[in-house]
Structure formats: structure tokens, C-alpha cells
Image 1: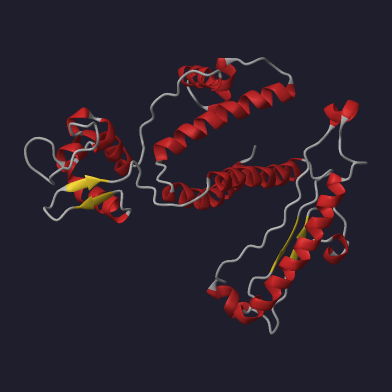
Image 2: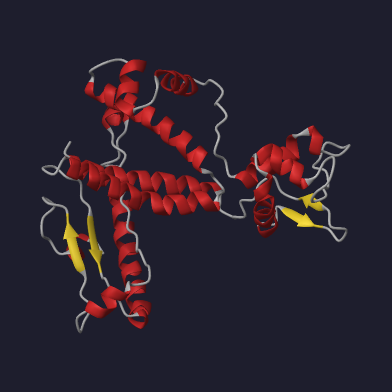
Amino acid sequence: MSKDIQSAVRTATLELLRPLARFLLEARIGIGELNALARRAYVQAAVRNAAAAGTYRVNVSRIAAATGLTRVEVAALLAEERGAPPREHRGRVRAERVLWGWWNDPAFQDAHGGPQRLKRKGSGASFAALVKRYSGDTHNAAAILEELLRSQAVREREDGSLEARSRTCANVSWASEGIAALGEELTEHFETLLHNLKNPDRPRFARRVVCRYLDAYAARVVIPEITEQAEIFLEGAQDSLDHPKYTAGGKGAARGLKVAVAVQVFEEPAPKAALRSRPGHARARRRAVPGTGKRSPRRIGAV
């Protein structure tokens, strides 16, 4: 692989990681936990690639050579895949580590086993002592407390003591089903684009139209129209996919495919450069995958 291609891959990866990092930060997932997930994903991908190529069975040394991980790390990760207890990983968000210690360390619990009300500083059990034990540095105690108070995981009582109210400072109300759908849909979209990148001669359908600058008032009309067209198209697609004539079953079940069709509308503020360079009428730019034809998006239901 040339340096130019590796550079392009790094740039694209950084683009992917930016929204992912925002997602993880809001969920209070630290860099260490992301690192652990990335290592696990690398091993899973190496095993999958080997199985697809049929070149070798699961081999710790070869996986280590392919991923850059040590043989010890690979062996431990493979053991986790087989059901071994996961290892503890450093790099959790410090505020989360402090909360964990507050709820689980007997030194900071009350007589009933709950988190003890703590004074900020002083001898014995204190918030400063808690931060030192679970964050490793008392100098950031003020910043950690500010984060815990802001997320309402901790509250300050009238007497100045601190009370733990939540086991996490992740102050989001996301549904677990929505999070699972996010992972599934992003995976399907990425796998489709990756397939097309690796197989330009036999791509799967993927088309994207972009308007670099759409007037905000016009968007109030255009976006609902596009949404309505998309709903009609997807209802038709669902009817086709669910038709008994085409649904895999019986003897043909082993040869069945999972097929997903998705349409989304992306919005963000237009950059100032687009505003300065826009022509008299904003024109959408279409980009089709080579080999998918030049049919009108309206004829095929794309929007």
C-alpha cells in the first residue's frame, strides 16, 4: 500500500472518529475504553479476514503480526472472545472512576453500604482523598467535582458536604434500542461503501446528492418534500422485500441474504466559503457509484 493511500485512509478515519468521539464523550466513555474496543475489533477483523481467505486457522503469532498487538494481548483478547472475563482497562473518564470508587470502596461508604457524604477536604474520608485514590492526582479535584455537579451525579448540601446521587455522570436519555440501531445502521452503511471501494467493478447501489448551500427558508419546504418522497420509496422497497415470492424460506433459507435499504437527510450549517462561492441558484451535486447507471433519482426512488 502506497503512502498516499495510507494518508488518505488516516484522513478518512479521522473524519469518522470525530462524530464517534462526540458520541463517546457524551456517554462518558474514555479513551482507554475506546482503545480496548479498538484492540478487540482489530483481532476480530484479523480472524474474519483469515477465515474469508482460508489461508490459516486462528494463529496468535500471525494475528499479532497483522495487527501490531503483542502475542500476549492477542491471546488475552481471543480468550475474551471465548467467554473469559474481560480485563480492566485504564483510561476511563476520571469522573467515572471517582464515582465508581465512591459507590464501591468501603472506605467511602456509609454504614448501610451506600456512598458516604463527603467533605471536600480534610483528614479521613473526603472528596480530595477519593479523587487521589481513583484519579491519581488531587490537582484536578476541582475540575472533576465541577463535572460531577454539572451532570447532577453529585450534589452539594447546605452544610457543604457532597452527596453522590448517580453511579454515572453520563447525563443522556438515549434508549438502548436506539443505540443498538445506531451501531447496526452505521455498520451496514460503512460495509456497503467499503465493498464498493474494494470492488469498483461490481458495486452495490449507493448514491448521494449534496447541496452545499440551501437557503434556510427554502429548506422548510424542500426537506419535508424530500422526506415524503423517501417515505413513499421505502414503503415500496419494504413491500418488495417482504413479498412471499422473494422471501427466502424452506430449502432456499441457507442461501438467503440480509438486505437493508436506507435513506437519510443530513443537515449542518453551511460553511462561509459555500456562502461566498454559491451561484445565483444553489445546485445539488450528485455523486453516483461507478457502474450504477445514470438513471434519474426520481425514477428509481432515490432522493
